[in-house]
Length: 117
Image 1 (cartoon, helix red, strand yellow):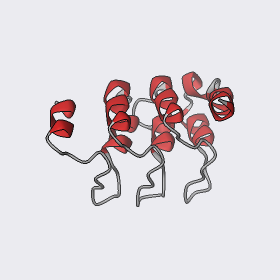
Image 2 (cartoon, one colour):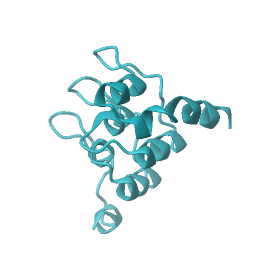
Image 3 (tube, rainbow, N blue to C red):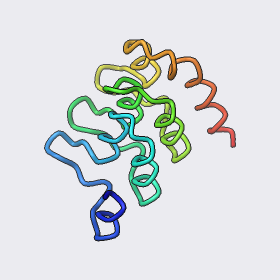
């Protein structure tokens, strides 16, 4: 369905009233396949929402379903792991607060290795 919408001209960076884009929503819900599709069609991995100036990576690390696959997709598409939101929280800190060991352990290494490549 997302592919059909994108092919019909849907904008992957459209912001709702809270400033969330489809990329934020997919990242927050652990939908790595949809996230990959959005990012491959121009979705912004570093878009800031209006709520706390959080990026999709912040939400992938602490959303309803923290997902290593989403974190990898966002980093692969240029997501910045060192961005602080309005609460001065990085994505890694958000993962720690959420208790997401799946994301906490590899996040620093993933962001470093992808930034060096």
